[in-house]
Image (spheres, rainbow, N blue to C red):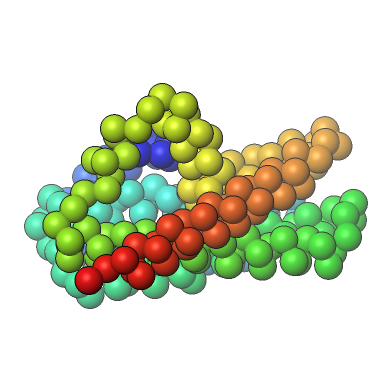
Length: 227
């Protein structure tokens, strides 16, 4: 599996929140709705110019991912699984992810250091690449069900160099890594006058776009070869 770096801390917090939600009788779908609202508030607050409000937005953005971990944990504890729940979770990501990217790009525009049109283009490209990768992941899941395969296990048999390359690409292309770490680089830029967030956005967009193109080509060849 490619590294979801932020899991190392998010999944230390989510069991505590999951226990609270479970004892309160909160349904998994309700947790997903709370996740969506937390993401919406986080994006909206982070887009505002005041640095203190951005800090509050950062907290909501991190709460968004903790809740994203918790909704699955609550579902497993209560054994409340449904296709409708999967649809809500999928919709929540489809709504929140573009809002995060737009909020990040708008914040960089507010710094006044870089061309706003370039930033808008990069934000849209990043959103597009992430949506393509997310849909390809869904296709991958459906393909495994139909064909009775498990490509995740097959990837474990790759050589060490390919595993290392895959982890490097995954660090930038897996969205939670980006959405939780980017605000921290933005604050570093704000206080120290660096440009880490600007280059991080560009690098993440470039890697995600290349990954989306490569994965799309791979699955096109798989589909063409299906009988």
